[in-house]
Image 1: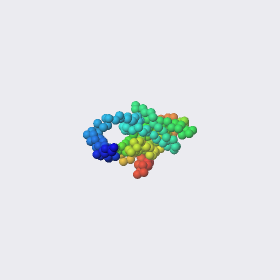
Image 2 (image 1 turned 30 degrees about the vertical axis):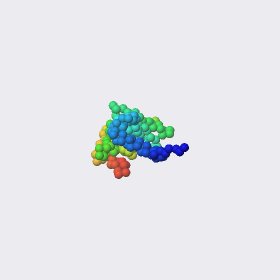
Image 3 (image 1 turned 60 degrees about the vertical axis):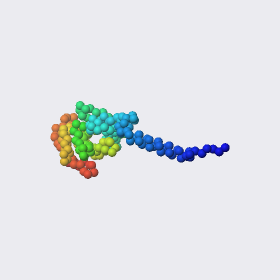
Image 4 (image 1 turned 90 degrees about the horizontal axis):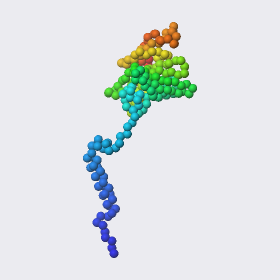
Length: 207
């Protein structure tokens, strides 16, 4: 008994069915708006770093870190005091341990086409010794990686009192330092200023 032949070979049915499925899926896809498509998938909430968000108003999961000058240690800024406008973090450099304090009340920003590009902020470093060492930090905002990076720093002094930072053509830092007749335990009295220009290679040239 001869087998009855199918009008279309079975091997040809498979690609035809797959093609019909692709066509139907394509029609269905283009009948939906992007909002309707996104609504079908659960959104994954990414926590924004509190310190970066508070200081710069930017939402990123990447924390604010900075390398402690003259060391290979990095400090992760984890705590923030909105009243004093100070962010802080710890660092560990072998036998030396200490804290870093970012005085963001004095921050000055530069933007390019409405997007943050650079920030200058003074910060202080304290360790097991009696000194508290102040610096002016130059930070870059890495838009691609969504993180803030310390690219250079300039020495201000030991236990100085920063009073003002301006940034127009140059960065000008005004602060008080101790004079030769003063004990370091006293409040500094001499008012001084430091003027810094930023080179094309993102280095602070101060005088």
